[in-house]
Length: 178
Image (cartoon, rainbow, N blue to C red; front, side):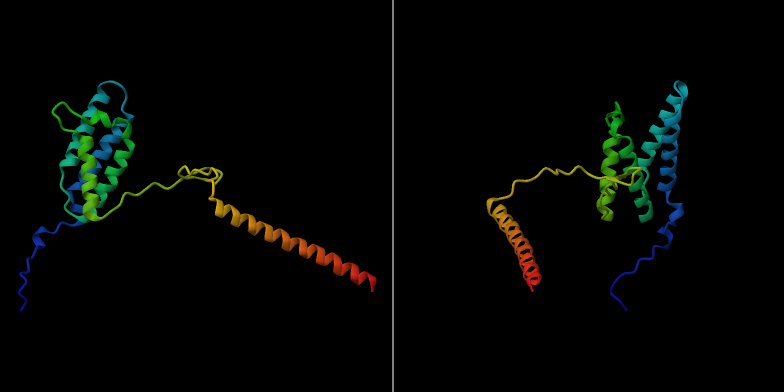
């Protein structure tokens, strides 16, 4: 018999599909999409209020599974990237900064699960060329010993080429005399 106390947590196990965060993610994604296409006027105001409520419900809903945590991280990263230009609009009069809470929750879950931020891949152009990060391709001044070594290397290549050409000419002229 082991000295370790075994705790049965069958009652606490939540199946993946029953995680409450998935419903909150769906509600927020749908409310955000409806707000994006809402016409001007009262429909836009109502859609904005629903998106606001869905965001606060999303940030308050606990994750019951690791898969739910991963889904929430993915959704928050997407939403933070999409709404970066509107970050200042998420401060409310009551002092709740939904933008900061979303960033903190994403960072906290990422650290908990050991998930690093995923950098986006370069954008592919129609020509097939990739636009990667900007790289400084200007020539860098090399140190004097490096430049001298390069000069010696090129001089050796030139001497070897001249020796081959002159030797070939000499052998050709000698063969034509015979």
